[in-house]
Length: 256
Image: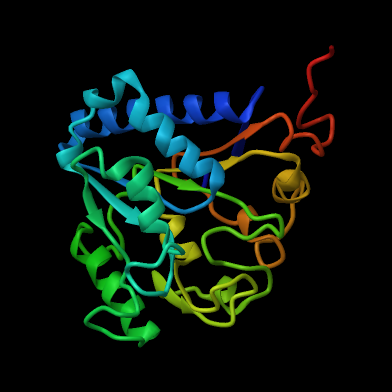
């Protein structure tokens, strides 16, 4: 059963990044204690990179046995492996170069599959399925860390773009992306909805309209970030600026 969204507001982007980092550590430790392995999904974006840097620098970081943590990407730019546009390069610099997590990178367009984005999506879907239990399409994601674009997109699922209508595949090729680069790979709503916990992380007034729409009852075709819901919990972790356009019944900013 999908979990209704909960809102947690931090005073500043820096505090937000630190708070989310602490939550990630606690969630991964609990998952490892329970099952022996953990699965974390990450995407790109400024505040998420700040969160990963905060996690790298967190004193409690080493309480996680990172060698048993599997890291998956929610989306990736389908560009050469050495490109600075790739989400996995930024994530590695921010965190994963410093911890021995098991990284499941999405293919690049200069890899063994070449520039066939559909083949690349199929390959990653097969990798997910191989780590899943039984006949499930994806492994048990303990938490998916997602950002939101000013237009309301999440991963590379854009408003009214073909990907928001996908009901079957776990991974799709995205073409003619409204944001460059034009070709991407992305998890779909069905894959994201399998996560135990979905955490949207947003900072800055530039995200305030999108946050308000996503939490205000918009449909996921028009505002894709309104769509993903964790089976156990859906958290919106934002700073005050990103919460500033929310109606009073959802958020009352502090006085003074």
